[in-house]
Amino acid sequence: MKKYLIALAAASGAGAALAQSSLTLFGVVDAAVTYTKGSGPGSAHKTQLSNSGNMFSRLGFRGTEDLGGGYSANFWLEMGLQNDSAQGFPSNTNNQASGNGPAGVLSFNRRSTVSLAGPFGEVRLGRDYVPAFWNTAIFDPFGTGSGIGANQIYFSGLGGLVAPTGTRASNSIGYLLPASLGGFYGQVMYAMGENDSNSVLPGTLVSNRHDGDHTGARFGYQGGGLNVALATGRTRYASGDLRVTNLGASYTFDASLMNLKLTSELYKESKGTTDAKGVLVGFQLPIGPGEIKASYARYRLEPAGALLKPTSSKLAIGYVHNLSKRTALYATIARISNSNGASQALSGAITAPNRASSGTEFGMRHMF
Image (cartoon, rainbow, N blue to C red; front, side):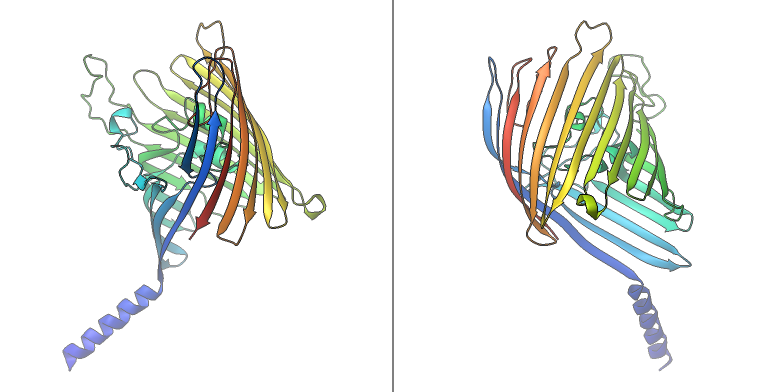
């Protein structure tokens, strides 16, 4: 009988603990029919079924345990999906090109963190967004989707999509301010490349022990319709550091102006001896069950000693029609113009230097 009572007490205690915890399965499935074309000699067009035109497709698990006294333990595991071809995305182990995984594999590349939160804020450990990426994601009217309306600065920039730490950093330690500071918010991050002390560039004696080490910070204020934030980040490389600094701002008007939201981002970056600058302005306008959104972005490379500064500009207009809280249909048109030798094109197209690229997109997005 004594053993039975002990077992019953243990089971009751476990039940109480489970009652204070939560586990959530979540995700996005997004697909679109996309047509893009270039212009000029050697140009090409393409029709494709793409993914993530409105929001990046993903599958994730997150959970929290209430520790009492306002404290909680949390985890977040999230992977990107290419649902048009049933593939995943690789992660990166060391914030360097050498750490890229094989293409198409499923991995928790988007986020993989464990954290402790409380009145002091939150400490996160693992793979997470770098602070400077948040401004690009939040202040772009097209959000974090990869469709033809997506941020030109991010997709063509030195510190954007192609950079190992342009979006996320592995092996990171992050701290986020608590949400009780009267509208002020912020975070800092330090991430490690994890090279050993004797590491050198292949075939040389040049030390790269600090390659992939990333430091970043972001601070902002949100209140009364205004949201503004300044962010910066630096990733160390023996071949030349990657630096990104951006300032984002938005203002949402009240119902008298149909809840119109104006957004903007100023962007400056450098990689080794090449600098770059960018600017984005846009708006989001709710219309019944849907939303009209548009953006204009301009991005210019400034290579050291170059006579020309390749410049590309992108105009995008889109509409999202919400069928429910979780499901939406969307359409987007976009055009990129190039000058000074630039040849940026919408995804799938090829365009000649100083010529334009345009495209259309129709898709569906479901969240769960």
